[in-house]
Structures are given as C-alpha cells and as structure tokens.
Length: 269
Image (tube, rainbow, N blue to C red):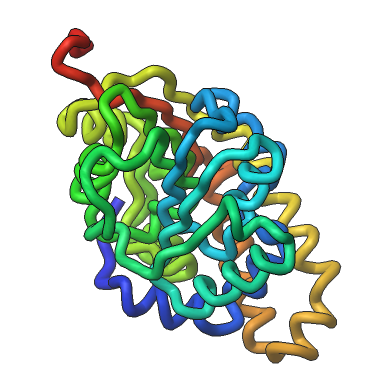
C-alpha cells in the first residue's frame, strides 16, 4: 500500500476533535474491533496475570488498560500522544477507582519515554496503523521489554493492493500514513529480536465488524448530524462504506500477533 503525508500532528488534530467521539460511539470506549471480548482474547494469548506490568502503546481513552487492571489486577501504563484522549483517560480512570493500578503518560510511541527492560508486556490494539515508522516502533517495544517479555497486538492491515486512488482514499479517511501487512509485521519483529509465538489473519471477523459499524452508523445518523453536522455524517458514511467494500474484497484486513523478546540464553527461531 502507498504512503501518505499524514504525520503525528495530523492524527492528534483529528482525535482532539470529534472523530474520537465518533469512533467511541461505534466501537465503545475501548475503540478497537471486538471491544472487551477481543481484549480478553489478547490477554489470554499474552499470558497476562496479576503480576504483569503492561505498557499499552497508543492507549487512547484507556478502555483496555482499565479492563485489564479490573479483570487481572495488573499494573498498566498507557502511552498516547493526543492531549484530549490522555486527559479523558485519566479522568475516567479516577472515576473508575482504578488509578492505583493504571496510569498514563503523554508521549510519542516512536520515542517511548521509559527505561530499558521496564515492562513484561507491550500491548497495542488497532492503533499502530496510525504510526509513521513501524520499524522504529517495534524497536522501541523491544527496548522497553524485559528479557523474555511479550509483545501482543492487533492492527489494521494491507492485504491485497487496490488501485492507487482507492488506497489513498482508504488511508486518508482513517488518517493512516500507511498500512503494514501481516508478513511485514512478522519480519519487523524478527529483525528486532522477537520470536513469533502466534500470528493470525482476522479478515472475516474484520469484515463482519466493519459491516456492523456501517449499519450502526445509519442508526446514529440523527445523533451525529445534530451534534457534529451533516457534513461529518456524510464523510463518515462514505469512508466506512469504502472500508466495508475493501474488506469484503480482502484488500484490507486485521491481524493479531504475539511475540517474545529473545534472550541470550534462548535460541532465535
């Protein structure tokens, strides 16, 4: 898939505005495909327990962080670059009485503001598609993980090349700089010193969810139009329809990957 000129400031501007609220209306406060159920699946695959210290990279409103802390009693730190999301995450966490387990840091995922070997798990859900340099991201994840630590994430993916115009429209609507492929992520992880424990193409599930969001959007037409204007609704309607078609045609997808930071005592596969 092609690359756009979208950068961090563009993403921050969008999510400081009403777009984040729109996605929360469609996906819930976790703002990723599958909601809490998918968070539980990823947590099981990552081996999360009450003793796990997690870094949630691109944590948005902090929904997954709170869910993990409440369910497992683990310590979670959320990292996000958008001021509005960061402040709202802190507010909701205090209201949930989970601020003893969950904290948030405002910062760039390509320059993770933590020391080496700090976390047991680095976590991400459908958010790394917003980052301009996935290679650098993965290296930062490796750096802050303890030896033998786990990287576990889902993300929206490129699967089969569409026309240049369609690719540009898909990326522009979602404010993505580019989409990685499942095999591309696998190679990035291996090159950075991870062994792959699991990788899964979630194409069919992704299509089903996008079609569900498309239907839900119609149900929310009046609410969105009244609160944010008909122009925003029409743009959302057009963009979600574009993604629905592309997902049905298997041009875009979603994947789940779990890897382990290889130690010197551990053979690399």
